[in-house]
Image 1: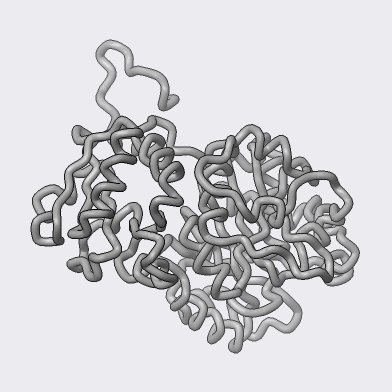
Image 2: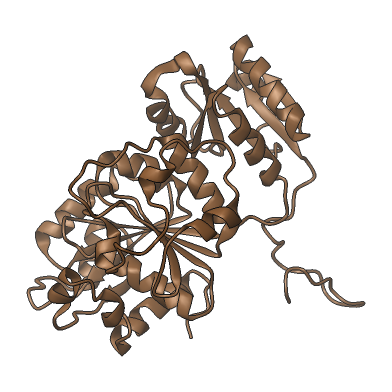
Length: 369
């Protein structure tokens, strides 16, 4: 049954309620003892048309935590009891410094809102959190070690999903990766790059963003420029604004996270699911185990890259790092040369690659014909 259809007379009730249907409570819970922070959030929630309950500490929050539609935690809250549901947003003030993301990781918050600068974004987020449509799926890819092939896998997945008719956006999350546009041979394609969005904040219009981005392989992409000049810094506020617009505008967002710690901090926590790509080698397994310590608490699985020098079986690699094996990336003849000359999309049309990408998309509930 389509999720927008209503059951007919005599139809049994659905066994699993649709996840985007709001629960009985639409209340927003804020946990903070900071008066200034409370006042800022009260003003934002009122503008968003929400209902706010504020408590000063974790003990007072206990009776309301699980029933709240959205949980916001102030930067003065340092610890949460184990097994509690993670807060949706950590809210802080401009003077809180650069430790907010570390604190967000400690309490399990997926997003950070620095007020008052992020007031418009938070109001938009709270409004959307009560909407029936949850938005597109964000699938992140990162390499368990350098040169693992995460960018290649990301391109092939985006290509396959677009070929199945999905609205897809491929995002380059690694400012030190040399520019994903080079791998697509699309460096001259007109459209926005990350430096053009460096000052973005608040709510970005999803349709305008899609129209402004370059297209290659049937999907839109957002890349760091493939140039020698140092690119402009894009902060976490801009990343969040872009990812929120991407969710609203696309059915699937494929995010090539990279391995840089800053990129992992900014991009990985925005993902609904993460695939770690690793060659079937002992050192790659060790490096992957180290990388997993840097990832947020997002559902994560493993893709093993086949190759002539593979020393371990894929299931053994997966068992050694403690991840489910999601797929095996095929060894394509001439892939290194194809990568260098921007022919990854051409390689992505090979049957083995299509089967590989189709399997990953099926596991994410996508059509992969």
